Length: 200
Image: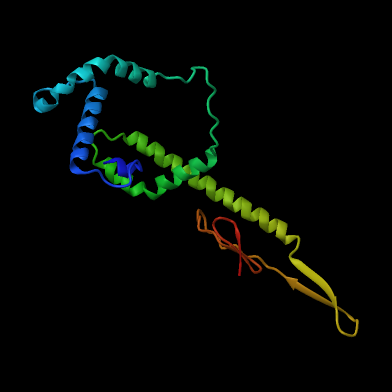
């Protein structure tokens, strides 16, 4: 550490100046710690007068920067949290680490088996509700699209004759009971687990 590292000088100091800066730093460190030099560093004891003379000022400075200036009646900071998203992440992490958690807890002497079983029950309930929600959402989408299952459009040929094109979309739902890896094919649109359309 030296002045050059902090942009205070263009070059590193010579050995004598570097030694002087080191001794100044040691003195300031002792003053900040509110201790005098002792037997360990007898060559520095000549500077104890400086530490003693400034110890009260240093104590006052440390007290001033240690005071809590935030009022007690300060309003709580508004947190922009999405509880649903955070709970979803917690559930996913519990599911991903389920086996590791069980192994770790089984080796712990004070394992709370009841608490672990409650966590498992909550995760299972969330899985069931998630599966039902996804199936309900997919069924709603299919009902909406079934209104437009028969598509028809009209165009004209080069002679001005009307041509009618019709097409039928027949959606299929490969959904197993409790299966969360759901994929739905509706016409040329494939819906993945996140229910966002991917055009193929």
